[in-house]
Image (tube, rainbow, N blue to C red; front, side, top):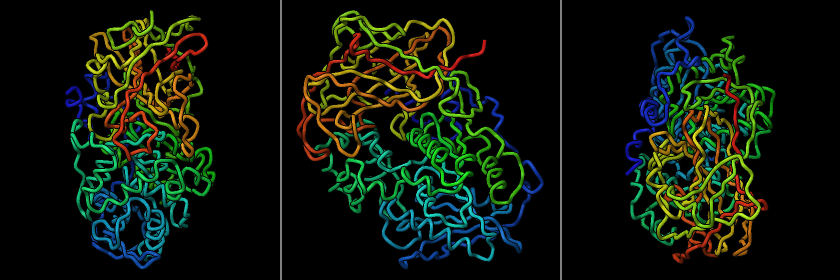
Length: 583
């Protein structure tokens, strides 16, 4: 399969090296934000006391297990806390304890050595707060706590922050969500591979995840909820199916509406191909615009690299950057990190790191790129004549058509996903399908930078009362490779609200906004921009069966006849954030 050669992009620095030949990225690009041990205190080499299974009492009597690393000298130290679901963090314990920190690795309720029953995410806000309260009162704590962790363990930091422990002073969340609905149901569409990998294949106190291959038959089982009966201890997955709209179940432990209660800053990390990239940008805006203190609003920062989920672990200088952040907020060391740019991004294609000061960038030129074709039906596949340009559409252009059959979905091939085949995959083979409309620009006469949020405005009809429309942007190289840049999908019943979905009228033209997330890429001279429009991206997203049945409960499916309009009245187009390039 095309995506197999990208499978090793999941984590580590190797990801950056593998990106280079396909996508002009360079792991060797000089990053001015890679910091060495920068002062005498940072280079200290304390002996370490290690304590395991220390019981931390929760408000309901349950005890969580903490594994603690701290310097083997008298005194009080800042505490770094990892509220963990997976059994990681020992490397941070060793690194930071040697440099004058106490590090507490706290097992989540029902996981590892902690008591209680694990109910994915639900107990973590209160448990995280209670753990901070206990740690802050220990005789070896100086009364200041910072947090760290990646993925699930980033979300545990966010969830506890609004409860306002007086000891909590800063966060370093790597690749975490704003709400779990936004993670498991992107714009209302279940991210099926995440639910199956994380929900069904992670069970027990110590069992780790397994990743079914992209064409594993279990993804195709219908009704979608049926496989749950084959797995023990997955009530949380049944809850996810039952709550298929953004309701109070999700709001209870998300932070979307709670930033005003968060009074500490965060140093956020993510990657352009991380499945939580979009959620991380939501966090950044939430802290900066709604944070509950000046520090939360003005000191929060974000770093975005060219990696997939988990890739921030391999960022050169990851721990050194955290050390400077913690030294400033927890030890009052004036090291200048507070004066650095709030945004650090890797510009793909150019292969450089760059500082920025606002998002979207103040110099952004939001530009419409319209789709068109010579005549009805001829934009189907890369063999068609679909075009992408800045020219406004003609008055009476006929729509392009394709049929979406859920029994034969378009399979996921690259993208902002956590597993399967993440990253900048070559989509040439995928673009051969007749149920994908393909629109390609002329070769660029000079480099073109696109940095910022990308959006598709689509005018379409369907023969179904419920269906999906997806859009994918690729960078077409002179050799013909079509490298995945970003994508998005709209389930039509959520076109107006994630809380109150409504069916569409078959045959009626609707305007859909497809959020294609954020990216930063320089399309080089001689390259082309290419847009795909279709109705599935499986199994990253659960298939829409094109019926009026409640999500996940039916095996019935229909073929949907789709029309995409691109005339003067219905000008379907991309909105691209163009950034002027200095000559």
